[in-house]
Length: 244
Image 1: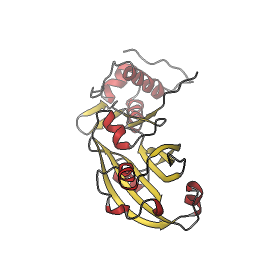
Image 2 (image 1 turned 180 degrees about the vertical axis):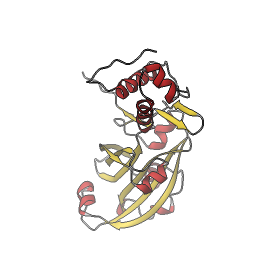
Image 3 (image 1 turned 120 degrees about the horizontal axis):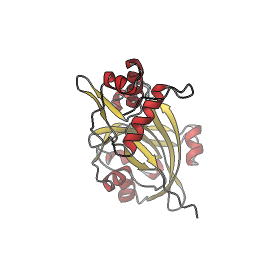
Image 4 (image 1 turned 90 degrees about the horizontal axis):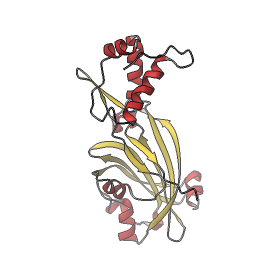
């Protein structure tokens, strides 16, 4: 390890962060590896302990390291990759990666379509809607809070079929004959509120990925509007595009 360069344009904490991230990317540091202490980092790189502490805090906030009280700081480079191009159910997506998905139903309800929902689903304002809010987990770790809105005309009494660990899309297909084949999705960065943070087991105002989506059936009819708040520290969205 070498000392960091004294460059006014690149602060020491940023240089150290990029160095650690590079070591993770090339495999020099692997998931579960223990990083040097703040004191050792300061000595090795010729920086202050405050700078080392600031660097580790940033890496922790971004989900690249995990700080354990009394044990130290460990690499946590085990992000779950989620494809936001290929339309698939959460359950099938996780099972395809060899992971164990689970779902907890947080609430089930009914409401009238707001102007916003009516516009997204191309239905009249005030139409009866079914809503379900769920917590998504992977290998028993909470990763996302999802909420779905479906016009009741498509799924009468669907609440009778909704339980923990059941797939909403499988219910729509097997019970109601509705096969969802594509979706339009919009992603943006947001910050978790207190109640959301408790469910996701993260700090309040942690950076998260907020998604809005409209799912369509085989007849290109809007069936479901959904939102999800996903932890950015353990989930990484990706896409694969053919340019020609």
